[in-house]
Length: 143
View 1 (cartoon, rainbow, N blue to C red):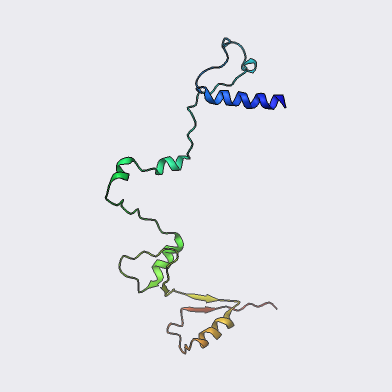
View 2 (cartoon, helix red, strand yellow; view 1 turned 180 degrees about the horizontal axis):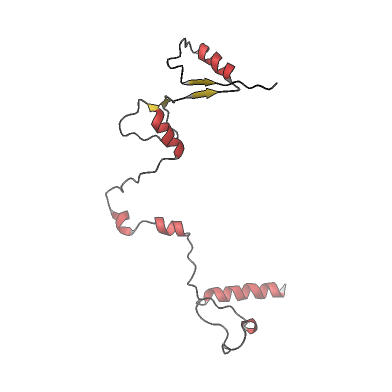
């Protein structure tokens, strides 16, 4: 228990000292293992992550009454594909996650659920497929 208390006290003392000082007054020719304290040439540790430092606004920007410019978020691959096949979008509208859109895909494929898709097609009152090259229905041959 005494060793544990000594370690805590040593840690507290070392935290209060500047990190660039050498705590051992022995000549440099002696080995480091004989030295009772550690030497660190690094500056004091900042209590924030690097991303917090980089995203912190300067005081001029905080005092400014003008709103900050919007930063354009790049689209994901899925959003780009959906953007390409979306219909009735206003000019300049970028599709993002959570948007409700109407699609007109080049192909619509089913395999295991073909009968469920066909029954839903009939339930909604559809009577005709406008582009029969757009629909691909596959069947599985398990036998």
